[in-house]
Length: 271
Image (cartoon, rainbow, N blue to C red):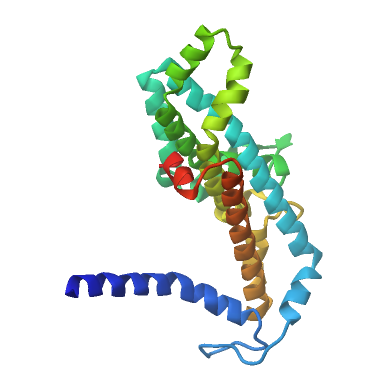
């Protein structure tokens, strides 16, 4: 009984630790003034009106959504091809390379990656620093492991080598196998990876602040600048980012249900 009470108490504290800051930010986004107190004073919609009337923030939000969508689409293609090669070739060195790529976000801090990209793509007669190309490339490198791991795990679950050999022996064309068998079977991994990839891309700050310019700033970069405007305005900008993340999560889960996969199936695909 004591052990159960401790577990429940620990869970409540953990949830409070996660949820309370979000609740405080949500409340603060409607407060007129918030300085030196636990809760803000007054009530106003002004911060949201101000947020949606500033083109810089809307442009940055659009940039983040585009970069996130491109990261999901391009990394999905790269990850499916890589997972196919790992499954079909069954080479130990290739599996080790994939495992190494999965560990990159942990082994290499984003600030180190950003410095490396700046040095590699900033020459006297050629520079991509501040362009969309380098921003997308940086996000592709940073988020690739989050898409790659679920899809590779999904390939291992379905034993694609056996399925492909059976299909080819029956005279099926490789494109038919890819379209009708491969893609439907790896949908759980794709959805799981897309969720992680889009979330990581949408909230990434360290890489973006180093490689973007004034015209290519992402939302987290301008969100950081919002704290110099007003606490209420910064809270409203943060709430918008959280709302988009939750909406994206719900959309991906609904997409999984549309394809006939429960939430548990998506989780297994990314395990």
